[in-house]
Image 1 (cartoon, rainbow, N blue to C red):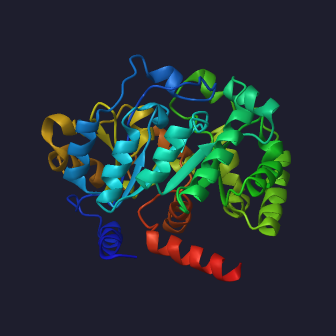
Image 2 (image 1 turned 90 degrees about the horizontal axis):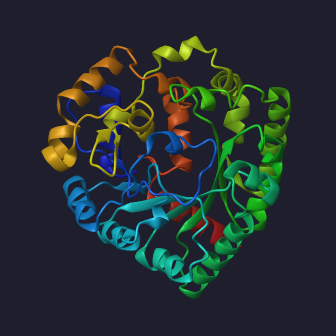
Amino acid sequence: MDWQSVRKAWEVVRRPEVCGRPYYVQLEVTTHCNLACYMCVRNEVIKHPQHLSLTDFQCLFDQIQPRRLTLSGAGEPLLNPDLVAMIAHAAQRGASTMIPTNGTLLCKAELARGLVEAGLNTLKISIDAATAQTYQAVRRQDCFDRILDGVRQLEEIKRQCQSRTPELRFDVVILKENWAEIPDIVDLARRRNIGTVFFRPLQVTGIGKEREAIGRDVDFDGLYRAVREGRARAKRLGVRTNLKEIAADFAAYRSIYVQRDAALDHQVCLLPWVQCFISVRGELAPCCATYTNESFSAGNVFEAGFEAVWNGPRMQALRRQFRRRQNPFAVCRDCIPRSVPVLLKMSSMLPGFVWSRGVLARRRRGAETRS
């Protein structure tokens, strides 16, 4: 853990109204998408999609100089024609970069090679299924085999380039259509040489009536059994997951889908001190959910500059509210990391502020030694 992460940890403890620049930034590079998944909030909020320009990206990055950077938002990042150049710009300046993707474009060899050669650290593939039939039920397109072909191609390009990065991970939103496949998704990850699978609940609060009804008929007893079986299988196969945490805190996951957990109304978020989300239009918020689902913006960084917004009056007021345990966002009731230990665990699997390249390198050296 480097000095900047120690400083951010100290700021989390002290929680000042004005703090140093964020360690981790999520930057929305596009709001275009090539899928229309039924559970995605993008279908409800994006009316005029656009790409972030390379010039705007470089200007923002050079102002903030984050150590960890995710290029994502309401769209599919691989659709931005300048994405590879953005990754290269960040990597050349010492930032660790991550992209979540639906994976449907990985079959394009030139793009896949560009991701490897630019220095992308982590590629998180949202697959949400272990079978083509379930994938089509969730994603509304028959792309399952194409995604797996893209994964194979990317692994081959990494081998040709003698590169261990990007590290590939699976990301799975737990839905009524796919919960029974949780153990099989772990199996699929192992077969495809995917070392990490992150399972997440669907955020439903404060978004829309149709979306809020999605989780109501989930068989929670069956889901719990699938979580436990998936955890056992992951341990046996050596696949890293968060299923242990889901099993231990299963009541919270149940409450997210049926929305009966009033205790989460006063949940305090630590993210306004350590990270931010910036939309393709330049609007800054603590995270993508508070912007996309709640329409919160602390200001526009293209108009006012990053520092003036990051430590501006709206962010200072929000930090004061959280210090007083006054949470203004309905969407926070769906948020799982309600404590520092859970946040740290999630950050080690997702590209959060505590995950360092040094830790990843040590793990790889250990794996090489064992092999």
